[in-house]
Image (tube, rainbow, N blue to C red; front, side):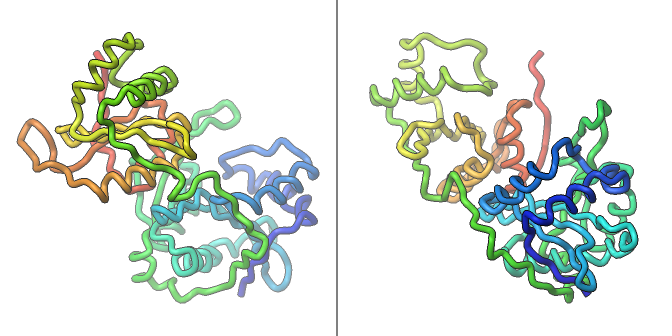
Length: 327
């Protein structure tokens, strides 16, 4: 019924016209304010993105719509996506497209969970997602600002298990990726952890990192170097590591005796955060629970403005359990 082909620069004007149409733009999260030349360059640049790629939806040998893979994270095996039918006369075909893409993601990319979010009034797509096996994930709901208005984005997720158990798992199609020469700035082996033992070099490195920190929960002003030295040498944590990325100190991660995980990176890349948290969880077990003292699982306190860490934890399947307030 459908085929999917890689996008060429010659498709730029058609896609831009689709995207700018009132019917499509109404339900999009972003607005387009550029021309065909910028669209062509975007198509070229997309071929080197590690977490994004896209295709044209073709029906009866005619391009009728657009579909994209977004936020692809092979480490935690998650991704998000989006699509639309651009040709008005074929708008009714939209409900038939998603299962083909799901099969590609789960079978060919090794994804375990697909996330989606819709403007709250896009009820037809919300209903369609429920039909395909999606579940609501309200902890990922967020507010979008569009044309000066605040709009609720409803979050949903489809697991591989639910899709495999459903009646739409028989749909298959080829999604070519011959032009997807994805590049990434970070790979699983590009970071290392050095346990903090209190050497003078580590004290200086930790102090320099503290000066650069953007998101802080535990302190409001910089301590003196001497107070910092005492703090490091007293070593208040269960375990504590310096994080090195590409031969440079980039941050720290620690475990407390209350099973709290603290992580602070200068680059604050969501994919890198996922990798580090996974390594810490794999190499360490939480301490046994003590009533009213500590839970029997690891948890992370996150500064409200630290969006990359919030995204990383959501990708890892972490559950939002509470909000903390300073009074």
